[in-house]
Image (cartoon, rainbow, N blue to C red; front, side, top):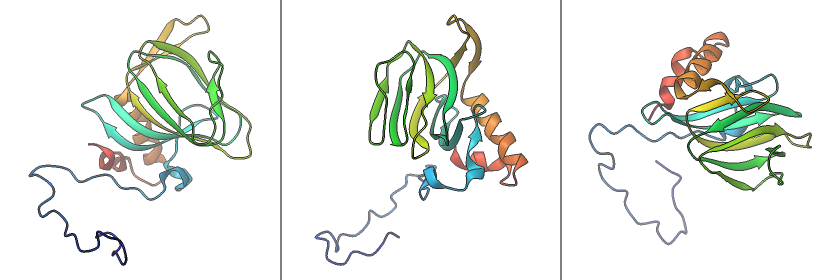
Length: 177
């Protein structure tokens, strides 16, 4: 039950009865995942971490908060599908573009794009909410694909990380929708 309304014009409206159809999983609600316990952030590289907040194995998609506490580098990659990003704090960008994203900035990444994600030194850690549709192809210096990374790799990395730090590998299952 949400907070009780006091003066809001809608205070007397009743909730929809039986709001979930049979077999529907409940929503995912997390209190401030971008600032949650550091153990929930899974290493992506030596300098960048990902906090999974929603995963769809069937759609090969995930939503996360990507975070770097100092200058960071994810890697060079290519994605054949679109990606959405909303910057929560810090500074980041792609070496291949002429912009630097800061707090409040939105980025839509078109399908068929290759780039190198970097995080800048900043007064605040770089935190970006991403919605990723996989797979991603990791690229070498010349832009050639050297490995693939999809939702199943993301799940495996999160399971291993959570198994090693006391959260438990099965925590990842609570994020599946």
